[in-house]
Image 1 (cartoon, rainbow, N blue to C red):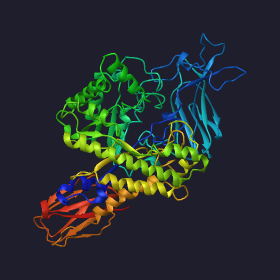
Image 2: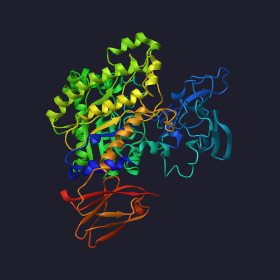
Image 3: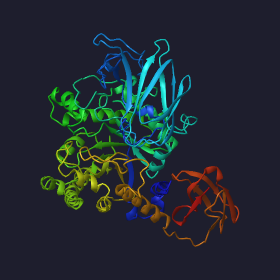
Length: 620
């Protein structure tokens, strides 16, 4: 819970400090990884949520292919479960069973797993489990003692058409009695707790949303609100992502601010209903950043191809100008829905960090006042000069070589970010926040295995990466002005290393032992957050009246003594929310804090410039 103290000082800093300390000029959040069966970021204790979408197997086929390829030919319920199993289809000689898999289980905790379901039928399993046991009509358990380098495959062998199998749950050890009240994995929450803000871009499968893949986008239809991701769908590892209800629950239950991306093919009713859902269900003290889609200039994503065809080519409008009406429409709908509560949201316009012409032609064609910030990335990566040199070095390339050309890349990117600020943010009078960033050390072309692959992998655990992050943060602090920190949304939280597709996670697995497997990116961000916290907590306030708090730390109550009569005493919790307030009528006051729980609190005595702020710590 360390990060909450930082939030307090940001919320109330104008009254306490003349300007931000260098350590507090950056506020870190993180992008969350989307749920996939091969991912090592596991937010949910019910692992059915990240199961692969159904594929099929032939009953009785001696060739026994992994996937018979008939999933699209079967009949399904509205929740995605098959209406029955096996199913006969016209284009196969074999009846079809229905199968899912978790291809990488490296992040799974070891222990006894529980599988629950409703309906009548039979399940079977394949993989690295032990001691599979049917313990009830709709319950079984198995031990997964060595999840690393293993898989788990689950087959619906039979499912009764009159009472089909549905609502399958695959529960982590020890969560059967708590998964409904506590759906989030405790270790994931623990590692996430350093961040006050999360971006749900990948949670919502924003890139190529609603499309079968990044390359199948040639369809003009829009989606309605009924087409969104649903809570009862058998998996959330789909092209619609995780339901918005779970985003809201995470923010509300764990006091996080959020950043949502509106699907590019959502119709007006969808956009309006999405805005209303967040307005009506998100706690008033939670803040939401709103963005239309993601990287709508990035040609590897379906949304860019779709917007170009239907917004530009078929309308005979230049690119990117033809994209602007879609962005404007989204901003306007959210502005209307939050018309009387605009302080609850920040409306951002995405810009291309290095392509200033595109950024200008998009943002300057938006209606003034319809957005609050522009948002580029803060990535650094290998310089254009470095790629061919590293390619020639091949397997002889070292982490020092990669770091050298990454620092060259930093110098190139600094100018791009300074230009975004001077040409767009400052003239338009809006702030600049960063939707993604961190290291972008990949091969060229992206997606191909580089000759220097090992050096790219090695630097992810090297001290050079830690040093580069700190150097990069020092530069980003020079962009900050005024009383508000710059928001940096790290990309990304947890993912395995890859020389082909990027090693984006600041952690490789949630249970990563950073003493034995270094996590320099995570360490640099954590230390930057703690540096601000230390700077704030150690700030010397004028305290002529020598107020005393005892005991501090405390397990239950504190007594405040001093020249208190007539002074206003206000206690703020870890989020900067006022939880107690009174005017003292005695020289000693006692506050019972046990009901508020373990954590940091700030006690302000007095108001205005003469106030005194003291930190209070409640421990178990």
